[in-house]
Image 1: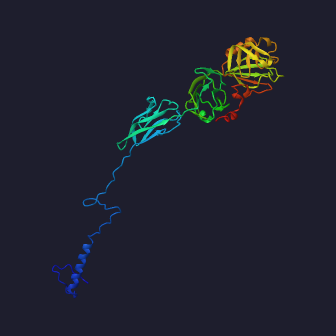
Image 2: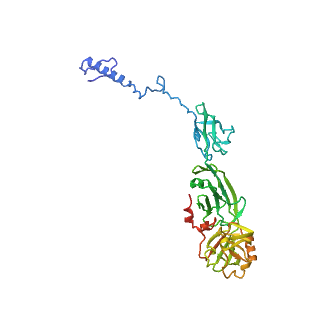
Length: 413
């Protein structure tokens, strides 16, 4: 088909012998194609509803944000029974802030407490009493702007017995480099782990040490090696409210601070009959001594590391087994609880440095005894060797250094 669109009057050229209706059909087809090219189908709407933009389009709907109410947590929970007074006592809120909190005892007295800086928690700062019911009150405001009431109560434990713990080191005192820390309870402790968790030792210089239970009433802390001179030590025993088992609870907290003095170690040998005093690493005295009679097992001075326990200008010795009572001695320094002392013995000066004739003590001349007495601190170590019997747990309280470190650690709860 040939269409001549160049003729103004639309006439057909002479060479075109096709009928006029074919030209008209072609024009119609061109018109139809032009119309089709300007038209588009509407896009399908996405699932969930129509969307659009600009004039005439549907608007997307944003869901409203719901702000949560305050969620209050009481510790202990409302209704709790048999609560230990040493347990944490607090109120906390999520999705809000605390407006007011009170914890009141049966007498109407409010328990003191402290707030977090953002007022999302409150913690009691006073110890609670035994066998009492405490009541919570207060309000919290949630992020939804609504108020939530705080209420409820709990009851503390009623002990079958309250057990007291005492510490052997005095506040502000100075001790020798072998001094152990001893906590002694006035009744057996069944839950030793619970009691031990309440005990802490802080030192001014790094010091490796550990607690060890020497009986169901006695727990000691000692360093792995002798203390460093000048170490400052703080002992804190947060025992009040601690459950010891079998209905027993801690009666009081105990805290003390002490200092380790200069290093003084006595190196003693029962076979050479000498005792050398080494202070800060240097020998400062060498004493002639008569130790316990070797041939009598009941009189032998024991080998092992002893610890100075007490000292007395005058002391009266008693030993019914060997028929003496109230024998007065001077410048007596106790080194165990089995009756071993360094003390003045003017009656044995002739044997001192030569033979062992005592009933277990280390006999010194009056001058030597006075010099040693003046130099000694409670907690100084006395390392004795050469005898036929070792120092053991039967010989008194401060036998801590007879254990090696692995044995000591094995006694921890």
